[in-house]
Length: 396
Ligand code: FAD
Image 1 (spheres, rainbow, N blue to C red):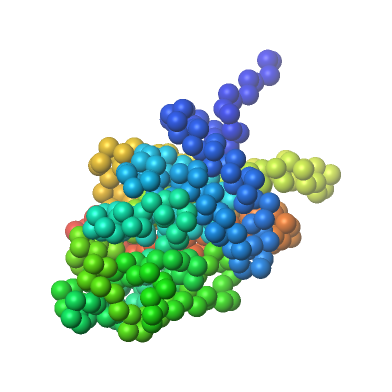
Image 2: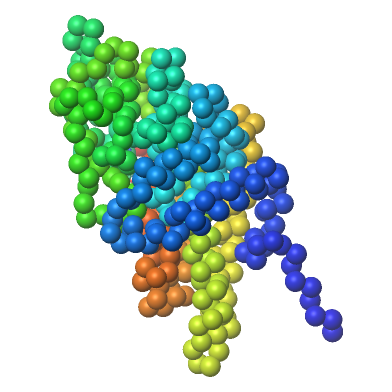
């Protein structure tokens, strides 16, 4: 019998050859992000995670800016104007290094910059976007509050008019990049409903404190913001955003990045598990020779490939201007859930080594617990899909 020909794919875990769906430009962008992360993130990220810090945040921001990654899918104002699919693939590479690093780029580009790009005045765009695209200025996005998470419509932060100014009071919780940000997009109740404000973090009455004791997304700065009589001019209000649809449109952008991004954590864990299973021997054989291990690996690869196909499809829909937010919910729900499962299974294959930061698996696994919760919890996205199927909203 002739030996079977090996599957002709560039990447062993890309069994379905999803890679063939990419354009040359997309492959180039993916390669550039991977190369940057291998050099500037991967050698340090386990230590950042262990110490619970992102000491290189400013340098990384500049580096990401030079690569054109910050607000990369936005047009003009120094942004790279790349396709949504390219942005997704960049998120995947970033998150294969660490979800905290992908979060840094997502919050900057898809939340803070997108809010200003989509809803801002021309003055706000020209003032903030070029410096944010280059990584000179860091942004954050303040929607969640201590008592309002999944239900942001009931937010307690308020902005009231005072002459030609607005005065903002309230607290925002779990804000990524909060204490290193130069500018915060803050959502508040007004007598005209929910409005957004572009607030320089140096404004009097604004303070940000890092949230300690996180066991997830540790290579990312997460903060509580306090706005105590923060006075901003009328020109700080985002003129285009009225009501909850303003922040929700931004979240939809960031969630799209997660549809791809989470798969990066899954890919890294799967690759680690495959390698480990070939090298680690028990009972005189590599553990990869046992059928139980092969069943785990096959199932991980299958879910990874299904997730990647879904992500690519949603990317193409987005580039065609035909992506609905329910489809983004479907993608986030599936890809984060399955990526987390892949990481957990990879952890079992590594045995005791699976709980060590010497390997990336437990870091990815713990990180994905945050990703499962932020940008809409998996329960919220389940309800979005449920509402689509039944026509009945069951959020309250
Ligand atoms: P809750 O809303 O209190 O939910 C608790 C549980 O109840 C969840 O399981 C939820 O699904 C469930 N639940 C709630 N309502 C229902 C319902 N109707 N039906 C069924 N189940 C329900 N926010 C920002 O604004 N900006 C940021 O930059 C940001 N970064 C973050 C970074 C990290 C690391 C984390 C962990 C969070 C971040 N968040 C950020 C906040 C995040 O978006 C919220 O944590 C999330 O929206 C959930 O809110 P909550 O934690 O208050 O949970």
